[in-house]
Amino acid sequence: MASGPSATAWLSRVDRETRPIYAAIAAALASAIRDGELQPGDRLPAQRLVAGRLGVDLTTVTRAYTAAADQGLLEGNVGRGSFVRRPPDDDDPGLVDLSMNLPPPPDGVSLGALLGETLDSILRRTDAATLMAYHPEFGSLGQRRAAAEWLAPFVGERSPDGLLVSPGAQAALAATLSVLCRPGDTVVSEPLTYPGFRQVAAQLGLRIIACPTDDDGPLPAALADLCARHRPAAAYLIPTMQNPTALTSPLARRRELADVLRGAGVWLVEDDPYSPLLRTPLPAISSLAGERSIYIGTLAKSLSPGLRIAFVACPSAQDAQRIAAALRAVALMPAPLMAALATAWIREGKAATLLKAVRAEAVARRALAAERLPAAVGSAESLHVWLPLPPGASAEPLREAAQRRGLALVTHEAFAVGPTDQAGVRISLGGPGRRAVLANALTNLAEVVAGTAPGRRAVV
Image (cartoon, rainbow, N blue to C red; front, side):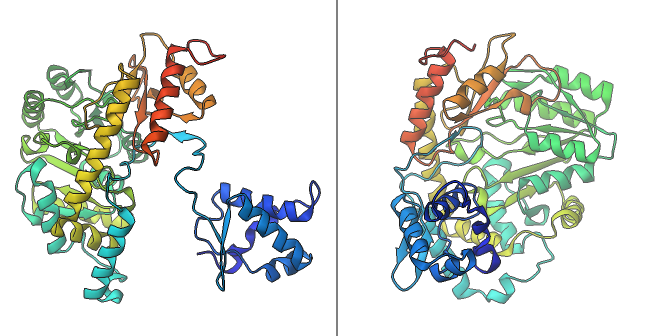
């Protein structure tokens, strides 16, 4: 809830020159809400305070607040004041974001109620001062046991001594690569890969080389050749619902890749946000590759990115300590309250309940994408699909045409390690709050792709 100077900062937006002052105040409110300066639930300053700051009479401010309420921007509570209103589900969504990979709203489960119930339980049984203090370790023993339980379907049984609780996968990735690599080292990845990895590699001064792929993932022979010629410090792979191509490597390919890396003595950094979404997940390559593999599993794509919790599985306690030291240098600690929340959800079965609901919604949304964009690639449980473009086609005209229709997309340029012939766009399915909004967006996108939208020409 806004208070103090920030509660009135939006008054600087009031433009007295172009409209009546009451309308200018209402427009300033609308602008501040649209830009995120004011958030849903923020309490507005008292009308008398606004009148005094602007040098106008009270009735002018009352009229402005009433106009803003009529526009659906505010709601009043007798005795408490006026608050920024949360848009209802049927409000116009504006630009539909198909560029950000988020878990969809869980089917039939109230995330807010689940959060409230668990946080209340944690605060009743735990000293709040302890929760809000510094915690030197990256996961207590109980939290690391919960991490082992969560990761077991993917990496098998692991000792808590080799596990870490990290403040998100990005921090874990940065810490891991800083331990395994030195500036100037080479890291192998898929030709199109997670942009956050590219950012970390650039920050650490690492050189990325792309391994050729087919529909099953990196080619083992090509990987072996790269390892022999370039002696990379590590290979960074996303074998499940790969980002952005949405391809999943089958078990046989995973075994081949594990054999190559183990034989070459190259570290594997396996990034696996999506395996929890599969009803029948495949074994992680890390479970096959031996002692030189680090597995990073985040809760961001399967439960909620707001948790900022990821688990890191290391081959030994010593390796975990090395990565923990690097994590401490860049992130200090995971947020204790979020770590406690994630642990409680896993132990009490609520994480499984939430995951089941997220998975059900993801499957329904993926089915919509299959109906409207049959050329898009991705498993039946994927949060995103990849729409490949014909050889020689440019993705930018498609992105621009989609944006004109109110759709935000991300093209292959954001993921490319170097020059690539894998032109396409990633379409994220979890971002829109309602399935109906996504359905309409996918219909519009199909029209753009086909070049059949009124007044548009084909873009592919």
